Image (tube, rainbow, N blue to C red; front, side):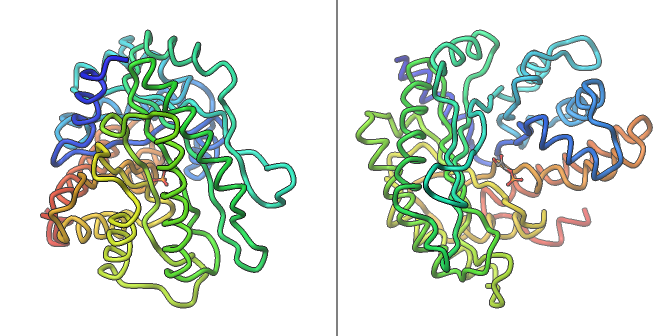
Amino acid sequence: MNVEQLLETAAAMVAPGKGILAIDESTGTITKKLASVDVESKESNRQAYRDMLLTTPDLGEHISGAILYDETIRQKGLSGVSFVDIMNEADIIPGIKVDTGAHPMAGFDGELITEGLDGLRARLKEYAELGARFAKWRAVITIDEENGMPAQANIDANCHALARYAALCQEAGIVPIVEPEILMTGTHDIDTAYDVSELTLKTLFTHLFEHDVLLEGTILKPSMVMAGDKCPEQNGTEEVAEATVNCFLNAVPASLAGVVFLSGGQSEIQATEHLNEMNKLGPLPWPLSFSYGRALQNSALKVWGSNPEANISAGQQELAHRARMNGMATMGDYNSNMESS
Ligand code: 13P
């Protein structure tokens, strides 16, 4: 294991003012995304959309890395230069999603287990050769109190897989992003979200410890601690920030290289405000940053999708703006007046 390389990559991923662009949608997910703006999901359109995002001028100022999908890491941009080379030129670290999706867990109706460990060592070696320096594995934890979810067995199985994945990544010189996503959908309140987050994180770090994973070369991609979207009582920005930071102070070791939140269905502004509020509570043991998909792409997708040929630069301006706003939020320096600047 090349420890120095892992530490260097992990530190660069969470450098102050920077975060990660998640554009690793599987073909199924990107198809839905493009359909939402009436664009057909054929390879040339997926290439054009991701080209628009990755060639945004000065994107590297606030985006440290981007997570790609298998198709994209092998693809060239519209200029004929590979996406990996475009990113390296722009000082954006190439990353790759390596899990093969969340599938129904046998015996646990409604719960999901993420697959993709079979053959992972060989796939990681190939991805490293293609230029990937970090990877992502997403586990999905569902809260449904009436039906006793999540079951401890579901949390254990997902965290065990995350630890095996992380160990394989580090062996290949790739920084693992471990993502235990606790879904924001449901009627649960913030206290339940807190309890499930704490249990999941404590379980995850126990498994990472047992698998000898180097935390200084690992990045956590968690959900924020928030009430479910159908909970009648929604909490303010400060409450969400305090609950999340308190939960993490209880469950996340200080040696971890950094935390990059997923947005999970929050609006673009809400995701920025929550991140900013958390960073105002510092100093904290780890950098708190972002690895948003929807909360970085939504406006850019909408603008570009309304006229993909004419609106490349307009889409890029939307992405650059959100990247800058979230970059400010990683330092607790964001305020809503910046939205109009
Ligand atoms: P969202 O920010 O849209 O939740 O996506 C982040 C991600 O990569 C989920 O795996």
